[in-house]
Structures are given as structure tokens and as C-alpha cells.
Length: 341
Ligand code: CUA
Image (cartoon, rainbow, N blue to C red; front, side, top):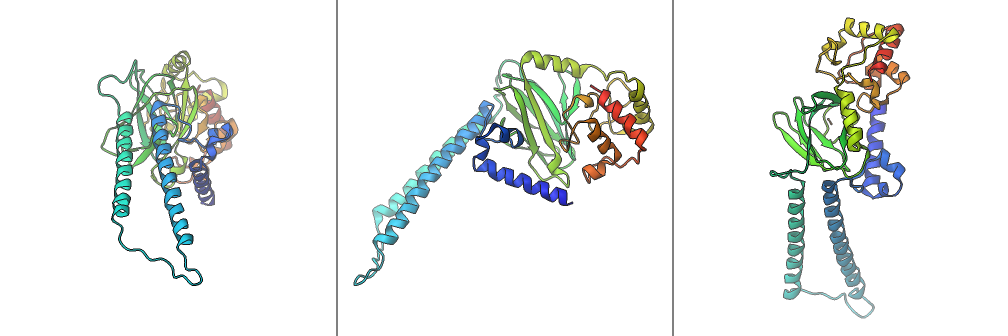
């Protein structure tokens, strides 16, 4: 429980740092704390532009109003032999302080609506060859289904640079919110509704995201990892993902036997085997992913053993039960997971 509280506070502090623009400075922070101030798509750039325009307007108002208050406080204060000045009614001033805010709000309203239109998927032609992905929000992980290429992955997905990416966001459980700050704003996943979001990544690299709507105890560990690749690298990743799981040998083969015997396949799918469960993440290429448990651990053999020994200790409340595996079973299953590349 303490670990969760600490994590929540660490997140809040990094959010405050991002809001103060601290994430701007070192690239190092950027990898850890994705920031909407480092836009890497035209959509995120138009949100960041709107933000800075409003910040500048608000700063000018702050300086103007604050300066006027300070000036009036000192210029008209009570002095020896002179009472504090009193004023009532000044029609030109009253008209000015009604008209100026009205005008400023009208400008902000116009810019906001224009940004919202920019963020909508064009109904005519979103660009050359959009990559469409169906994103599922689950408690507490993400599924990414590529209907055109016919494969499904979890928590980590790849897209090509320079192509529009259209996400169809779906939830069959509770509200989640999909947010990769460097790509676009947040969008809620609402059970029973199809929501769509798009962005066109302009830089290659790894972009992190996070579920941004409280969705239960492990909401914090619902990370998103998006890898933007050159079209050639992306095509090769797609070919890898389309391949069924590699045939295990040795200890991994024993792990596969335990996987089936322990009914892991009731929740997990491994393409090319009898495992076709959809309640949990698709594990066909688990060994090639960067993290375990939607970001809670980096994917190393030691961490995989830790996870399998008791997932409830690593990510309390997640829907994978403690299977009470023996150390030998844990080792064999780890070998199997690592072999799924
Ligand atoms: Cu899903 Cu918060």
C-alpha cells in the first residue's frame, strides 16, 4: 500500500515539474516524464501553442492588474495630513474593464475552437496511408489490435514516423483515458462508445503515455509505450508480430507444458498454440517487450521470475492470481516467456 502511495506522489510531483516547464530542460527528464511541452506531432504542437498563447495572455493580465493594484495602493494611500483617496463611478473605466476581458475571452474561445477542429480526424482524407489500431482499455493494461495486419499486442505498440495513426479506443469495463502527451490530448475510453483519436508522429523514438482517468487500484501502472520507427523498421516489426510464437526448446518447452497445464491459456493467447484467452495480455511476443505488468517492472528474467512467483506482491490487486508456482515451475515459465520473441 505504501509503495502505491509513494508512486502516486512521485507522479504528482513529476506532473508539477512538467507543468512548471521543468521537463523542457534536460532530455533525461523527458524520457521519464513525458511532457505536452515537447510536442512530437502537429496535433500536440497545436495544443502546446494554444497553451502558450493563453499563458502569455494570462501573464499580461496578471502584470497589468497586479501593477494597477500596487500603484493604487501606494499612490492613493493615507498620508500625514491627507486622507486615503476615495473614488466612485467612472463610466469609461467600467466600459473598458468589461469590454477588454470580453474581447480577450472571445479571442481565446476562437483559438480554442480552431485547435479542437485541428484535433479532429479529417472526414475526407487524413493523409497518405493511415495506420488504424483498436486500443482496448483493461484493468490494468492496454491491448493494441492491428486489424489490417491481423495481430494483437499489449502495453507496447509501434507506428511508422510521418504516417497518420488513427486509434479506435474501446473499453468493456470502466472509464480509462488514453494519453501520450507528446502526441495528442487525453481522450476517455467510455464503455459502449467508440472514440477515435489521431496523430501524425514527426520524430522517431520511444514515447511514454499513461492512463489518465482513475480506474481502480492499479490505475498508476497502466503505462503506454509507443515506439515510432522508420517505415522500413516498422514494416519489419509488423512482420515479426505477424509470425506465430517461436517453437520452444529445452527448459522453455517445459515452460510451455506448465503454461497449458496451469490453464494460463484461459486468460492469455500465444499465437500458433492452443492458448487463445483474451482476458489478459496477448503473450505471443512477450519476450521482446520492454516491460512486464504494463510498466511495473522492466522485462528481465529476474523480474519475470519475481512477477510469476506472486503477481499480487508486485502489482497488488491486478487480475492475475497468485498461481502458487514452485520455484522450478517459475524458472521454466520464465524461460518460456523469454523465448517468445
Ligand atoms: Cu485505466 Cu486509469
